[in-house]
Length: 430
Image 1 (cartoon, helix red, strand yellow):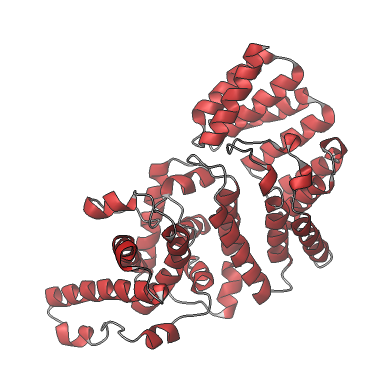
Image 2 (spheres, rainbow, N blue to C red):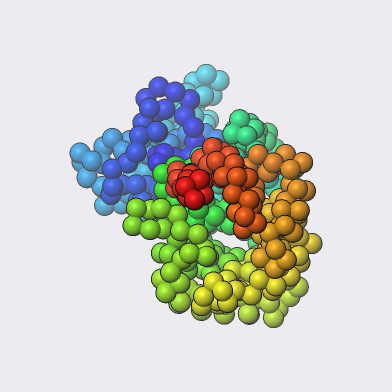
């Protein structure tokens, strides 16, 4: 895991940013990083420089805490270090511009811990969410920047979520930071009406953070529980602030109904277990009950939205005690509605799966052909994985093996790769 989401420029920072933590600091630093960034960015009004300063504070913690121990107030410690880095940078800029006296007085570090705590909101991570969804940015750029700042995702992980090359996403994030700097709009907590305007982007960020936590797109672990849990926590916080918003409730319901299956998704060696093979007695019934209750309340309030529809699909799966009892016609109807409300390549892919379960695999394969000309997904491993599964259901093992192997070569998730290879080997051995 990286110390911080920013890709450092080089040298010692680059070397250490790629070193894994030894527990117990990993979870603590991941939790504190966006909180510290929220404070430093609001105080100095410079997001890009604040991000670099927080990166250096995380490196300092990584090198000092194992020998000296975790401070009594680790968040305050990190803020102090980051603020000193920012102050040093400001002083250097002052010297260069020969304006030491005027600006240095405004950029003195914050020595007392009490002053630091007074400058902090009870949940600076939530504030940072809204701050990053800046009005000068396009929705896609705001979401990408927030995934870095709040979610701690790498550029490669964010690129996977957006179905674009990593280099493209790196440029997008860099431009987003520069756009904020050039806009002249303060990087601060937005007013209540501005928060409402930024809410769709915030919810999408939380959805993507949860998705990466539930099914990690890169690496040796199928799930990243810290990301999934933080996404649920922040969504609960927004639900408290906006209790009557049906899409907030829908998103929280979707997360709970999906997270409920977490324990059944992996075997003893962290191997992937697909939905139709899972031991459903391991599903968290308390999360399922809470998710269904939230969904029912949301659906009674307003027109159906993106997250409510996805939560409804998850609920149909969760309510089936056995895979044979799954109400696929209802799922298919919900996906058809979802295609109208929020069309996307992944929605089309899942709609094809549902159609195959209702009308047969040939129908699913027919619907998949529309995605072959969509550059966002044409070379994505999931398209080949689904195609392989449908060919297998048709009895065409040669085509299934071919697409399982293509999918395995294209995924960057080791558990998913292992699963796809094992599926191809199973068919080849029959």
